[in-house]
Length: 148
Ligand SMILES: [Cu+2]
Image (cartoon, rainbow, N blue to C red; front, top):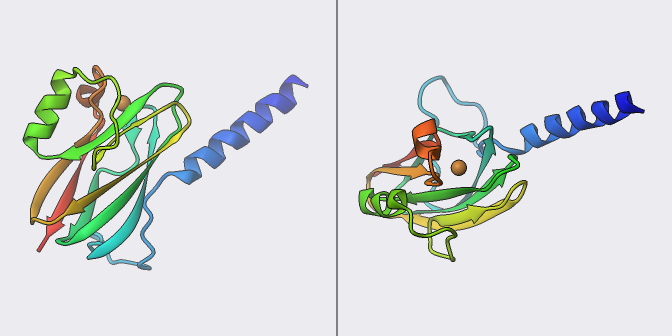
């Protein structure tokens, strides 16, 4: 009986791991930077496992609205915040425990999926991160690179 429970648990873990990842259906790409998504509305799935995002760099074109689906596989809370330096400074100082629907900001409960939309309308590079205490320092961060 114990063995059966363990077997189904590892199946669950395997299934959860497969859920994350990068929803890009553009087919095969040569090595190097992946093709930029957009413009227009695109959906990007990002997993969280062991307090790491499954994606470190996302490339989009100017004029892309990304629907982020954040799949938290961990037994603890996380958040996903994308924005400029001022946005991140505000959150790293951390007075807000949860994030009401603000574009580009979502709190995700354990084993839950969070959704937020963000429009990238200027070329450049924007950080995404989790600002719960210690999480950014641990490495919960990545970049959205916005091409022209
Ligand atoms: Cu976190």
